[in-house]
Image (cartoon, rainbow, N blue to C red; front, side, top):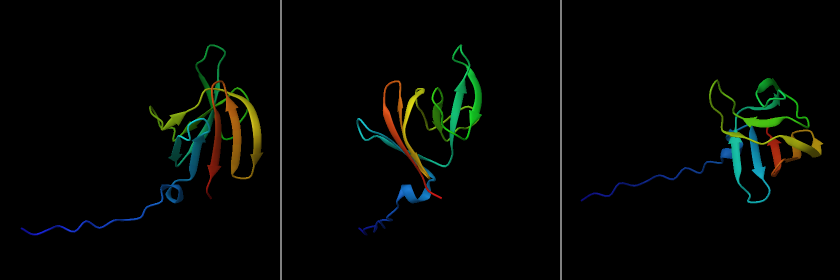
Length: 101
């Protein structure tokens, strides 16, 4: 019986995807090609998608027509923001978002 050799490929997803999101409390991370910031109507329905973060908006990772990779609850505070990085608090978590150019 012949043995099939399995080739291992070292693949770093962080280098392939443009965005990396990490939730502080448990280290859960997600990666994506796109990120957007959702503005909500007062009744909790979608109002507008933005490119910039702001208090009251939610981060959405890889938004598609009817799906997404991850969406946070609304931002309550922006703790730190610099080029290609933001740390922010939501109603129930702390997150860090990095952008690879």
